[in-house]
Image (tube, helix red, strand yellow):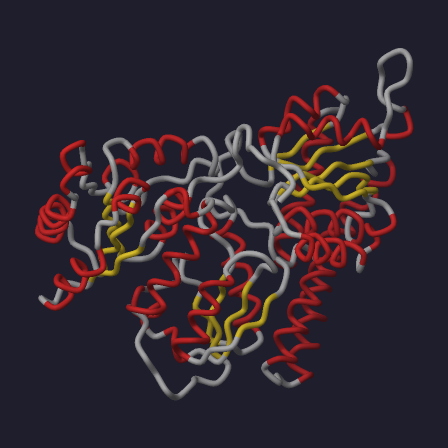
Length: 447
């Protein structure tokens, strides 16, 4: 990791990510064991960074919390948590209760595992996870919660169900478009003849989650996130994993479906038939707008800013499927050298490999500096004319940067505070059409 600090962070703490994941699971009631205010702070920040993702059932400000205070820190807060968990089970109806810890209980060493086991022995469906904010960012919290579920809630099944898969790697809230993207990928995999558990969509149930240990394969839609949960599946249930980058648009989605099909030894005719139909439909729509793109000269030089999941995927989409010229890709996830090498290798497999400079930066204020390194200012203070016209794909934090360089802007990566996201997603063939539509709408609106 090259940065020693993070200004205006793009991610929640581990507790925030864990709370978003638990709240997104069907039938789950999260219970926070943390200092007063943790849950509320997370919720109000959630509004301004996740596409206005709502609270859901027993989420947001309705999340039960132990609200430990100074005396609990001195003498331990387990009594307060026991009281809170008991009243929550009595008052709030849930299929599963998930206890999540904040920084203070983790630091003082509250043994929530023993308390959770005690409640479980009385027949209460409850799982505990240590998710103190210092344990990582929001995606680490997602991994911790999913790992706890896999190890203590998912049923053991020795036999595997052929062609059943679990989708992992897209963290609720950390990816504002997680529901739409999961639904798109689920639909495509079901069209291949697979049974799919996607955890966080309207098609999922908690019973599906409980029976996910008999899957034949985990498809981890990330080369960087979701690994701990995938490892837990393999360690606890013997379910192997296939890690693939998020497929945005036709080129990446074709590679994604072929990889899954090959791993599961699916009939080639089924895969080829699905790809032919999806590409026919995709390009039938693209053909309708191609004249406008060409006649109005809507090709752009582009800057992409996003995490290690989406920045490479968006960069490849712009080059391979939209025909644009991505010149700068800013990856906001701190990575070690092997991670940076994987990002560069993925981009090099696309046309973007010859076009874009990849940098790693957590500080939003430094994005402009990286831009001026590739497009030096002229003596009159303007950016080099060869970069214009320009477009910035990033978070809402990049709006001012886009305005400063005279570029159009679309928020597609976290944090997402200037868009409302409901069922929208950018994965798959349909997601590629949606992304192209959103990008071109910005250009049309400016005319």
